Image (cartoon, rainbow, N blue to C red; front, top):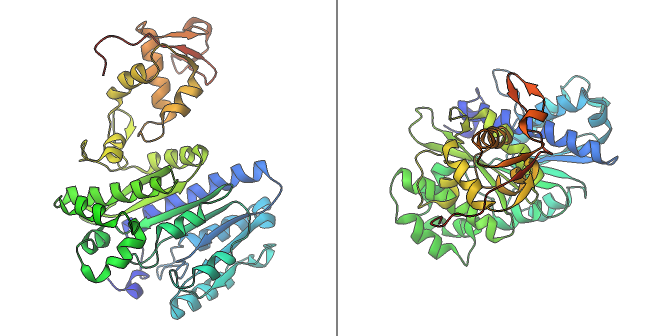
Length: 376
């Protein structure tokens, strides 16, 4: 598929991407605007045309339509849209201008025709010093670097969403002609060791290793909250991309985790899959995201042995790097209380009923038993 053919109609991968990014922006902007009277920003460095030939809107036009219909966003949203291809850029400008009500926005969209990787200084200068989400969705991987992502996520409520082309990057790992780009992506100093680890695997194992190494590279740069979501190819046989949300605060991580969980194609025992099966203990990050709900009980007993915390504290201190959402924690703690494994205060009989079950509110205190001999 060429870049021009891409805009005929959205693929399944594009639809998943559009849905997740749009939903996250909606949730994120509501949180930000409830906490500040200032502006917020959405930036897209590979914005594309904004609309497919079949009329489907991509993320830039969806965000602008959302802003027009929301009184707070109309006043406080700053948008920056860039595309390096001149023809695509012209389509983008025309499609933005054709949106009904676009003149109602206090901040008219800023459009740029620059190249990511070459013109980063100009792109970064175009971003205001306000809470910002930047979306990076290249046709391949050109221009993406750890340095760029690190800069985009530095500062209060500044986050990045990367549509990571797993398939192309996997092929590029052994291509000597593009090694400088791989160094930008994984870190020049670490690249020789990273490449050796990836090349030790084959087929689906290697695909998982690519994502594992990239998220580890983010962590080495202080971006601890890297949350990957696997998008399969049309046949469902392998990953074509991973949508990776990068931030430095647990609040954004938790919001995106809930959205990705709802968009997962399937779940085992009520735990979202994040599309990470098969994964095993060779891939520490991906293995943790593939854990079944039956593991959560023992994980909590091990992690919080002898401690007393609120349900909210249990969730917030444990959920990062796991597939579990808040409902999973409440369900497991409720079951552990019924079995007498933990002590909850107030006890179940003093809490209200909902849908035939005792509630387990955020403020319920939980006391875990001391560590047992033999626990690892």
